[in-house]
Image (cartoon, rainbow, N blue to C red; front, side, top):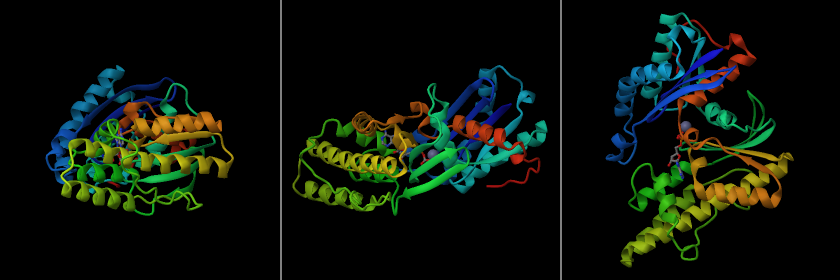
Length: 331
Ligand code: KG4
Ligand code: ZN
């Protein structure tokens, strides 16, 4: 079965073809980051319009990459939500129009399920069950995953998501959008002893998170640092203080979730999963506590069409009736 995946929930247009027999056939992605950069964040209307512009060329590219004709597609999976309404509507419209034109069934996929299953696209995928840390721009969740569709929420953020904390703290430091990679790079030059920022809910005895206090702590040190007219090095020190704090909390909660569930496999998914400091800390914890940690390929940490094609294919493998031929736009 060949499934076309369409991702358009935010500022990335992703198309991909996944074959349940042969694996990922091809994928294509266009990131709108450069367009939104000058506004310091995603402008929803611009995002929707750009998805419209990019989708068909990306589809052609994906079909060409896979060497198949449109009729070879068996089903079309698209991101149903959560995300920006206008942007989601574009992906949904494209999927439904293609379904109608090709007489193929369509299937709405939950964006977070796409992220959650993306590590299974790797060459050495984890077996079920596992604990998953889902860290994206909009969500921070710990889950027990027993199979496709068998998800138990163990804990989540009570306020900001981890990616949001990265982006907002980066903005306070005057770094560009998206801030996650920028603050991470700057932190490499920072002194780890200069700023000891709070580690919210580190000892809360549950698996929930809270990052808004950490963002406020960054705001306070940025203000004090500006008032004292401190040099550029101080920015790097603050970045380092922030990254160390958030990585400490994420790592400790993952270890606690493994302890609580008795599982030995940890899977990281979502944009923040690309973070090198987080990966280093988790790898060190895995060696010490004897568990195994799995990551998606770097290109599949942030939004992409491959994870949607894959999640759609997994859903259809379990329940072929999951896709429908009623092409009402449903986001
Ligand atoms: O999963 P994703 O592409 O989109 C959502 O579904 O939200 O995640 C985007 C988030 C952004 O907040 C971005 O700053 C963050 O992932 N991110 C990173 C890194 N790469 C992306 N955060 C920290 N370090 C990175 N290397
Ligand atoms: Zn995402």
